[in-house]
Length: 375
Length: 175
Image (cartoon, rainbow over all chains, first blue to last red):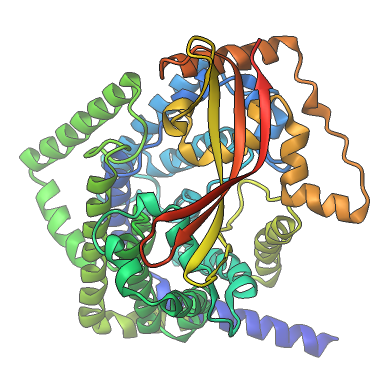
């Protein structure tokens, strides 16, 4: 029994050491990423929950295991105004680095609670799941200690940063949960049935842009079956890439970006939200040096604060004008423009990941040494 | 990471995953959408079920097709089917019976106590008023709506709908 426990402990140590080797990044790089997340929350993914107060209370049907199930109905207008305004202000605080740990915790709690109410129509949306996972993981990081107007106190010296290793496990499990049921439903040798085709044809009226209109004419039906196989393999395998090496993990992330890019081009499905999760695993140390240098100068500091104030004001105006959440550039209804934006974002992500693979080999040795020392 | 923390993390991930498979998906949980639906190629045709809404216009005395997206604004369109399943909150038992949870309970022979089915007069009036108001935005003055479950055949090469038939229809009186 004791030997078994020792063996399990050994496996556990090996598991986390491998993940840390593949993902760990220093706090300075995470500080740059924090600014990106703040900007992302202000520009690309700012939710709007105000409409919940205009909905009849009879629609309220929360999941049994949900925060909303402790309540009798949707929240009132004032509560939602307060929550939305706080979310916008907290995004700006994250961008500027004003008590980033507190901002992250508060943002995460408000976002989870508001989403609980939004998902009380009989369906749970999964699009914010990994962004929430990202924020939860960053609570345990030092991303607010550098490049910050009001910095956080650093955590204990020599404490290894578990935020990205934890996030990578969440990403792997999230994809596993999606791929598992697909594997049961889709994987067989019957080429007259498939799942990807069901997505495509079921809402054919929405598949009007880029390559989508040409698919029925030029893609054979079995092509969707091939997409089923590739999709299931892609979703069930990230843990193996993660455990293998940093390079392998980045290759899987590139595959993920290509997967979302193709989803946009072929199926016209927009997965813009996940962009920020994938680029969290990049090393921004070189950006840190340039940013730190720039932010020592007063004009750059003023520019940064002004930018966040302008974005904050735009978001607040949009909120009270009843503009649905989403990105700052296009309305929710402008599907074509939103699709082009998402395709552009995935191209940028693929470029950044490829660049980091080509330039990242120098850092590899350093992280490997650190991980083996700490575990 | 210590072993007990890994075990806790495993429980945090696996318990919601198990609950989802039996139809009790919790929120929040680290779960991504499965979308495990399928189509079959029947000689170049595939069939799908869709939910449509029409309203009886008291002025023209005709059933008029409703633009679902505009109708449920500001609620996002992907909730439409879930709202029609519960007849816009007026019959929650209907939605639960159609859900994975309901089907599982039925298979196990467990009778579900649907506490929310009687939503009360006030909430019922609120829903009917809301439906009438949303219909008036499409210039429809209605006393009754009809929720249709249609089965459509689509050509896999042209993408055109070749055949449609109504599988089920449910009515909601608004007066």
